[in-house]
Image (cartoon, rainbow, N blue to C red):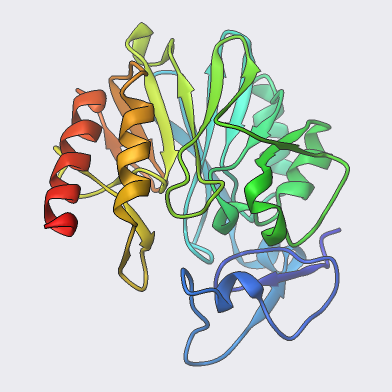
Length: 266
């Protein structure tokens, strides 16, 4: 429902009006000095436009202009098994739905962590597809819906060629998507900001809170690096437009985790 309340700071959609946004009151996010502000999808449509553009081989970015809330963009993965939507943005209108449908539609949706849950139920209804979220983050969903499929454990195969991997960075359910056939068969990791692509593309970052500069706990980063050591990927696609590590992604993650642990554990 396009009139449901949307938090202007994080973009979470809720089932009914409320005075607070639990996502923003959590220490990983923030309520701005001006206080909690609300909007809705109808209002966004009057002020924003959808944006669709290539981000890499078989990877299409989806977002809006001007930027809304956190400002991330979603990624449409054109896998052999069918198009799959990674992460989500608040903005959605008929033109965007038609454009994505013309590209082949989508077979499912998965989201890295609660800051990007936003209007995912609107997306699921528009394309009649399931949404895969990790059960460790169940408490944060602002709009429960039958389209949500909660999964558990370390991995979830959402297609023959797409695997969700729970790393637990940033949120307990923090997840990345591994596409082994991405980058022309060299492998791609779609990371949201669970594995954060930073300005120095020779490294990535790991944080518990990005806006509040709270470092991730060393055991969590160590476990994430150990898990990702078993996956092959050349590129890493972060949460923002053009935030991409184009080469040696596997080595970048391992090198970055070692550097991080050297700094925070000494």
